[in-house]
Image: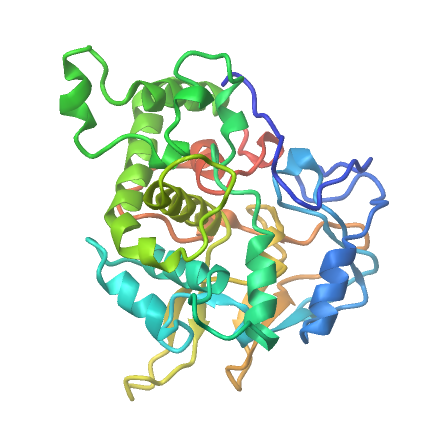
Amino acid sequence: VHSVPTSGLSLRESSLSSVTSDSGTSLGVATSQDEWWQTWSAEHGIWTNENISVRLPRTEERGKGGVTATKNIAALEVISRIPRNLIVAASPKDMSTRAVEAATNAKNCSWAVDLTAAALVALHPEVDATPLEGAEKAKQEWVQGWVAGGWATDGADLGSEEEDWGPKCVTGSLLATGSDNDVNVYAKFRFPCHPVLHRASLGLALLTGSDDSEISLEALSNRGRTYRAMRDALLELVTTPSPERKGSMRERRAWDVADVLSRTLSRVTMLQFNDDDSNTNEDSYSAVVVPLHERLDHSEHENTKLVVASNDEEIWLVATRDITAGETITRNYNLAPRLDGDTSEGALRLLLQFGLPPNVWPSA
């Protein structure tokens, strides 16, 4: 846990020679375009400004980055237009009845429960449903590509398989390891919690330069509590569990819920819709994941913003200032919603929730 492994983070990863500075400027020339994105987006009605380039994220970018201006882009210029039916959203208008019913049965109601339920429904159609077509099929293909996630979504973040209390001792995934009663269970062994979680918190503190591992332990524990509060309610949404792990059907479904939660948390943002479901004419904010925006690099001085078109049927990615040729297109992940009870800040939050690499962490 004394480094940030980068294996297993993208199905479309490749070796590229360019790097990105802390200011968000590309220092090299990307040589490998993301052909999957170009084909998928064009086939499903996503318009992308001709003055940007979308390349494959490098492994060390942990799934974020690769979107760059190839020519100058003016402030308020539209960078991309995304049909609303392609996004994953925790809003009444966008969630299916199946997702709403499952989320309602969770122990705690939150945007994280709703958004995870929506993502699971996008991935897993009902068993007897007709084959997916159109926007539903497109959304499934996109969500299937969410490989990178928050820290320890991939077991390699916990070190080698030979490490004591490392990946070999994880139950499905780190997020799914442990219970709400761990303090009592392990007190007799003089552990503050599950030993795998304890070791992970020490490594996470070391990685992010914190001198207080209690903060990272509480952040990890809070993430676990959030997962367990939704796990049982969302199990039914996983119709075809991932075959990679060994375990019972229920265990594999539970681990898939954990994985989707982690990958959803790492992509989420808040979006203001103009829906008038309550006849109050008040704008509403919902947690969403939006194609292209979810893979942007991080900057505290972001150069884009998501807005909803006046007809509510498109989401626009708009430049918030002039962007020069060669500059990376960015968003500010600090503005994304956080889990209830989460008090993590700085590098700890950027790595744990979003999986962002050290080059974008704030300077000490």
